[in-house]
Length: 92
Image 1 (tube, rainbow, N blue to C red):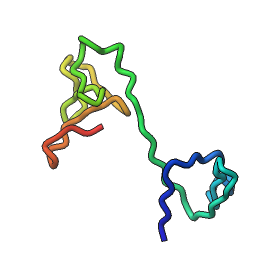
Image 2 (spheres, rainbow, N blue to C red):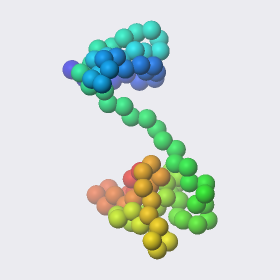
Image 3 (tube, helix red, strand yellow):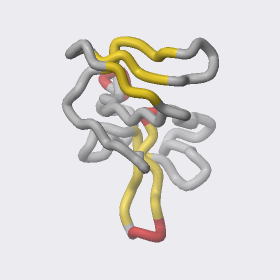
Image 4 (cartoon, helix red, strand yellow):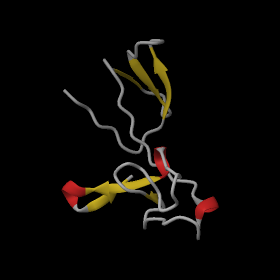
């Protein structure tokens, strides 16, 4: 079984290096075999405004090899907005 919990804050992972549970902000505990976490990110691209192409969602636009429009300058990590040909879109 998979349990999805939305709008709850995890304040601790139980079990040391092998997760056995989560401690929730509301005081609850939840047992688990593993943890998958997805959080939103906001790229810090202010330094590159008017220097590099910035996507609608704030990522630095690159080609599929993560090259920017400036020769020799690459982007990596959460700031990248690279072409996702399968969806004819960009991904971050």
